[in-house]
Image 1: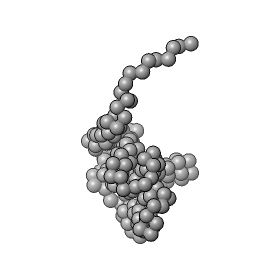
Image 2: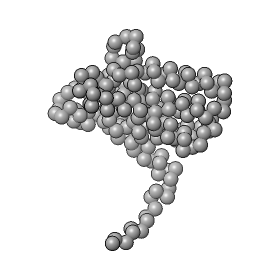
Image 3: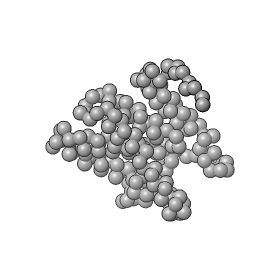
Image 4: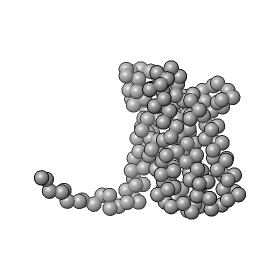
Length: 175
């Protein structure tokens, strides 16, 4: 996935707010879901600035699904003991965003679902390297339409939740 992680995090946050199983402030819940859905890709900083692209960034611990599933389990256990814990609720929303990221990356990207215990990548579909630069192969692949649909869905949900975003506002006078 290239562009759909943040929009998918927004959709997760909107769904979580709608379910109303949390005592978190809606803004906190949304930010936790967005942060979790994008956090695994912070490893790209290390990938480009330190590792010099030697290791596929999906092999870093921040892309280990077992890490994110473990965080879900840990925060769920914490919530079972302290039902009103803001930290546990925030942590659970963040971890669920990370799991969502792993699921989306598994669509057309290699994900090491059993890392660190098993060195095997899994993906539902593969994107053949047909174009240069490399990212053009992803953008021109049919799977990119799924990403665009996720972005469209997030936009529709946002506009439905914030109808004033469509109102015309007068332009400020130019100096």
